[in-house]
Amino acid sequence: MGLKPESSVMIGLATAALVWSIHSNVTPTIADIRVAPPGDKDIASSRKAATMSSAAAVSAISLIAKDPTIFIIGGAMVIIADVVTRHANTINPETSRMLLPGLRQSPTQDVPAEPVFMSGE
Image 1 (cartoon, rainbow, N blue to C red):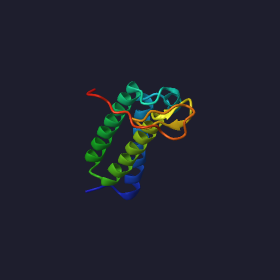
Image 2 (tube, rainbow, N blue to C red):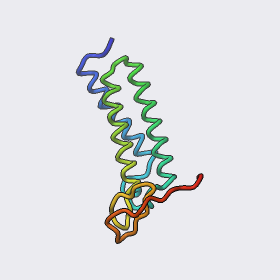
Image 3 (cartoon, rainbow, N blue to C red):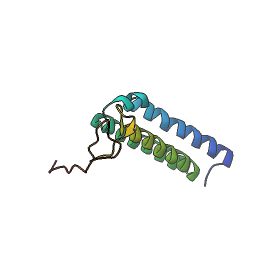
Image 4 (tube, helix red, strand yellow):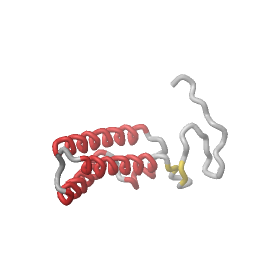
């Protein structure tokens, strides 16, 4: 038992806007994330909190409305917001390039150096 298609899409878009506002309020702006050191743990934890909160909101709204369209649209926005924030947290501000986890890179180096293996952390 779902909603009418017109209502379903509008509520889905409103849910997507709610997801974006949750991410905007819980995480720093994308510009601030990009100038922070790559792999910042505080940014990563706020991204996780925003993703979990917005996923819970999407789930609650779609279960209350009993409509899968709301879940699909809202869930897509949860994924998009998470990927955008996660990508911004991997950018090295000195090179404006993505810094892959576990690889050592210098600002003048085009190709990543050999992998750095973490010991028991």
